[in-house]
Length: 409
Length: 226
Ligand SMILES: Nc1ncnc2c1ncn2[C@@H]1O[C@H](COP(=O)(O)OP(=O)(O)OP(=O)(O)O)[C@@H](O)[C@H]1O
Ligand SMILES: [Mg+2]
Image (tube, rainbow over all chains, first blue to last red; front, side, top):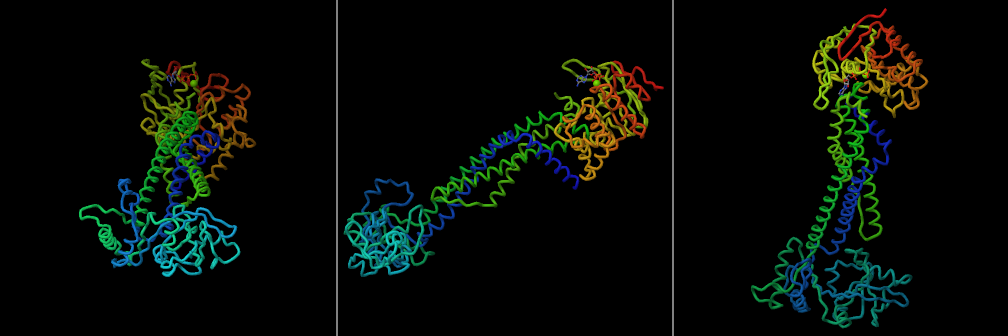
């Protein structure tokens, strides 16, 4: 056993010596492996980063929420057909409110994007949401200070608003926003509440929001806008039952004849998660494909350079054999050289991959996250690639006849 | 008895042609003999040395090395014999170009698992024996021909082999340097080593106790010198 380790150690020294004498060549040889590993590590790090931010931001949607709309998310249904469907209106909202038993809160939600002003300050592209007091429940929005929209605000169509954290931060640098009036176009709204910080959803800044009473929104921006009915169910376990109940109510209100398809859709967070899974699966497949092709090419490169190296060092092999190296000593010498070349390439690839992931995450809303187990597995895998592609050349070297090798010119 | 070969022949096939390098050579070498193999170019001297050195296998005939039948051995066993029992010195030195003199001499011990510290001290000892203690860290390219051959001799000695085989060890050296190398061999012989060397030069052969003359792959004459 001890002798085995001495053999390996000596082979390692010989391999490193050989690499040192051929630095550039070794580097070029490993390029395929470097590129492959860079891609794989880059993609994997970004997927992991995506996962982290995806699952935190998707939780803003709430797994006990349902969204009633004209379209199903990510569906391949006929878009034109869906466009001609009847609009969703307050009639449906009222019906659900009265009849549904499995529902905790229902809120009609309409939206637009506008510039919001306070004195000389202004903030562009703010998302204006028109809804009711129930939006505070369905949208999981909680005022950090002040109060939420109230039933009276909605009923009397008061010109009041609850603003997102960022709107408060940008428009009101020195004073408290509560009681101040902000301008939406030529209309003024009194701020009654400021929401706590919420972050972003798919690159959408949730803190840049102004919530106003539903009726006021319709008066300002028209009543023909597409509406989403947000529903929060009482019991997440019974969300499927709740959906069935809603389908029944909606079909009745919208007078869908028996046997006909629904002319509305009930969307939920799961659908986004499913879509996301399909997307990342595709990304994994790309990483895997690129990775294996690059490793194959890289492995063949390593094999090629090993064959060259063995030809160049035929005499050396002869000398070693003449003074007592066994076939297995020569075999190990070149196998280890192959493993060392591949592993160095792999290590460089990992470093580059992480750098690229960091670069991408600092230049976009994507974030990257490093997984040490994956890196470890990667290194082992690359070493196996080196072993695999080294076997043939190393075996060839080991089998050389000593006298032929010595006489090689 | 160190070496006993019986009816050894070696045939090379070059294309469709057969080249008979050795045609039935038999001889014995005793402990502490000092023997020269001579003969014209192409007479089979190197071929014979390679067979004796276990670097090459004969086409037929038997070879006993200290009573062990070498002609039946596998690659690993032959490597073992080359490593422990035989020291080979080549005309062209055959040192590793990128390794220092010390490392070159250490090399045979790497292949028998000698621990690193012991390896170093034994290699230094061997280099001192051939008078190179001040050149241990030099690479072959930084040494003269004579010095390179001394390194090669030190390497052949270092595992304390039963026999030293030298194929024209002075062939690439000038007369004066050749004489110096021969002095080393003489000393080694005096210390009890068994040595076979190939040479073209009568004055080199005169250092030895016995001369075997080859011609066309056969032993023409085998006689003691006086
Ligand atoms: N690998 C080989 N393939 C074919 N023929 C060979 C080979 N090695 C040697 N021979 C032939 O065998 C014969 C003996 O060669 P060998 O090298 O033993 O001669 P030598 O006595 O050492 O000659 P020199 O004094 O020139 O070194 C020669 O005819 C040579 O051409
Ligand atoms: Mg010769």
